[in-house]
Length: 209
Image 1 (tube, rainbow, N blue to C red):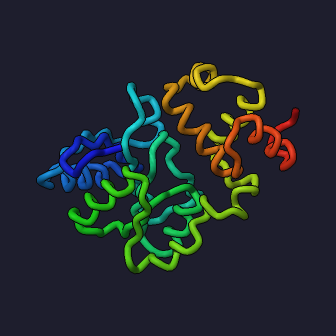
Image 2 (tube, one colour; image 1 turned 30 degrees about the vertical axis):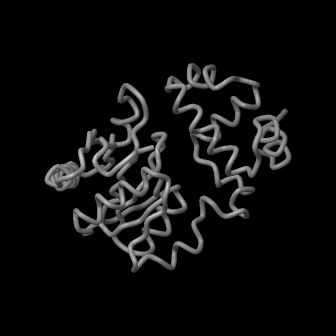
């Protein structure tokens, strides 16, 4: 949790377009009052980054997004989208905030700080999507497709009775990231305990006991 806007913010910048990555990194670097530690690349590149998960993920979905799958990097995601349809798809893929790709750098910085603090952020023109964030609707919490592929892996390991450390070792991720995914699974299944998550997942056909 960031204490103030001047606190360092570790950011993963995800984009398939190297030109977009460069432009966004420069825009963030030109801002005063906020220090960003930016690692930029594709999701595959950033999954292998050493150390703890970032404070936030900035996800450029591109001009022609298709088969949209949100970055699964252990931190809340701010998605940059080209239109409302892309915004809806990004929400369904787990984004916590939405801005248009041509957002002003100052708005981008403010949104990143908010998302890193656990808040949701929407461009005013995308505000109608706020009413139905797919990743947090109770109805979606019981749907098999509410879990990301990584969360399904974690759920399967929970069903085996593995601890966070054992899950981290099995998936070759940090224990902090494993805990993040476990908490996300519990929240999406609407339970508070690991055993409850496994029982509910079994009833939904997500795991076999």
